[in-house]
Amino acid sequence: MATTEKDKKDAGKKDAGKKEKSGGSKKRQATQAAPAKEHTGVGQPAPEPRLRTYYAKTVRPNLAKQFGLKNVHEIPNLEKIVLNVGMSEAIKQPKVLDAVVEELGIITGQRPTKKKAKKSIANYGLRQGQEIGVAVTLRGARMWEFADRFITTAIPRIRDFRGLSTRAFDGRGNYSLGVKEQMIFPEINYDQVEQIHGMDITFVTTTNKDDQAFALLRELGMPFRGDDKPIVVNANQ
Image 1 (cartoon, rainbow, N blue to C red):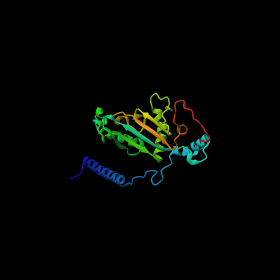
Image 2 (image 1 turned 30 degrees about the horizontal axis):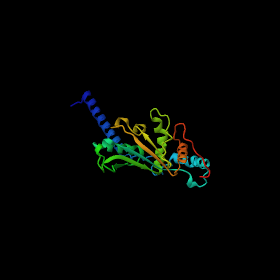
Image 3 (image 1 turned 45 degrees about the vertical axis):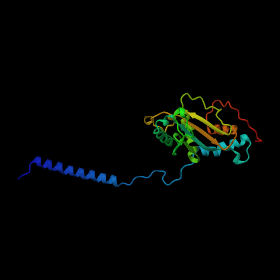
Image 4 (image 1 turned 180 degrees about the horizontal axis):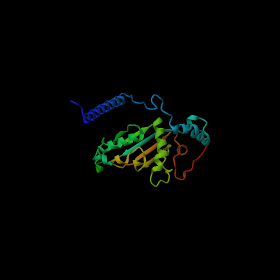
C-alpha cells in the first residue's frame, strides 16, 4: 500500500513529539541530578557583630577618657538585654502565648521561655503557677546584634517618636523602656500577626552608676530625649 502525504506528515509529527519528550525527560533528569549549591558562608566563622566592634574601637576609649578610668574592667559595658512580654489574655486563652513565643524568637533569634505567676490574684482569676508571660535573655553576639537592629532599625519605626526618656534608670546602671507594638521590628510580618502587644526591654550594664550607663547607651547610639539628664563626670570615681 502506498503511503500518502498525510501519513508522512503524521509520522513526522509523532517522531518530533517523541524527540521533544525524550529531550524534556533528559532535561528533568539533568535538573534533578544537579547538586544543590551551598550557601556562600558555609564553613566560614560568623562575622563579628558590628556594634561590638564599634564599642571596642570607639566607645570604650571615649568612656575611659570621659570618666578618667584607667582600668579596662572599670569601663561600663553591656552585660545582657532582657525582653519581657506580659499577656493578661493568657488567663483565659493560654494558646495566646504560643504566638508571642514565636514572634520573640523571630525578633531575637533565640527561643524564649514562658513565665509563670508567682502568686494567685482572685480579682483577675489568676492562679499561682499559671503561665502568664514570655521572656528571653540575650547575651554575647545575639545581644549585640539585637541592640544594633533595635537602635538603627526598630526605634526609627516608632510612631511619633520624640526621643527616649532619660529618667528610666533604676539607680544601679540599668535602663528599661516599654514598646507598645511589636510591629516596629521589620522581622514581623504584619499579615501574620494575630494580636498586637507591647514588651519591656531592659539593658543591663556592668556598672552600678546611672551616669556611666547613660553615657554608654548614648555612645552606642540610643536617641535620648534632649539629654536633659546631666552626666556627672568625676575623675576620682
